[in-house]
Length: 494
Image (cartoon, rainbow, N blue to C red; front, side):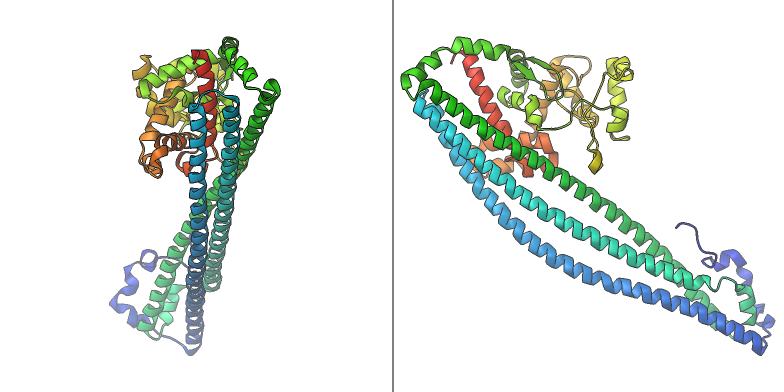
């Protein structure tokens, strides 16, 4: 595309200023036959210009029609999205009410009837979360449809531009055999000659402009395809989250049924179960805690690290445990791939190699022991997240100094459990302080802390797309944190 056709030349550059000199008129001596040839050549140039102008004209007429259709579709989509968002806000208010009920039963003390009601309220809340995920999936389907339409429009516009350019070039190339100096010598009118030279210049300039437009359209198409891939990935992740929430609801139902079976509905039997806390505490302390990025430790070790990170940041230990627990990754492919095939080549690989070198882990890297999260190959998105906290190298670099200021280590190590807990705590703290989360928490002042934590957890998982995941992922973290809170209470003997 960058190579110019032979006819698309700068006349001054190729033939020099001499053709514009005053003695050109003196060299003009035309026969009738030559005039006929020149006239035919000029007609072909003019025809080329007209073909090109018509083709470009059709393209320019086409564009406003597309814009009008796009505006109509966008308006319709916007109305539907607003309706969906209003329904989501309604669900959010209902979930806040259920959370209040759950908190009330927790404060009333440990009774069998209170525990059963709390569990049922928890199931009802999860069912609302599932509804919210379904609404988000509906919205994503509409976004995907909108993006697909934009891609189709862009492709169509590209085809029109290509046709305009190729049509003009085909017409113009039919005149390539003509010698322009000869045409000048045969020209009965110098004004006609320069008029046609001007036409050629206009055509050349227009071709260059349209080639640039074509390149811009191609970039738009690439961007839209990338956005569509991201949306499809988001939809699949939301479906995975939905399945996880359904499983959580089933787990709570089983817990309730098991409790009723063990107590046979008698308060005295339930109270007897509660007294056996020492045995439960020992089991909880020794239970294996699986880290999100791979590896495991006892729950007590994990809790101690969470308390350490919490003391430096103010983030609740339960939230940190919930995020770093392997199950909270909900199917993310972590710690299984080589950095060369997983990471962004310019954004992350150089920083990753710096981190490895600073920690003296080159042997682990060359032996294949050091793995990172895998990319989603089907959608073209990069992986490369490191260690338990699952930070990509460029994000880890942003937090490295703050991590070492807490831990006192000379270098922040993404594969260190302690550093990972601190990194997660710092990120959550920053997210909770962000304008997005503070504005969100202001929507329901009575539930401000819950909304802050929900927003921060969703940001940890989805970054700028957190709003779509505030129920699906954010609430799954809060629910898991609540279960950890119960375990911690048992350990403490409360």
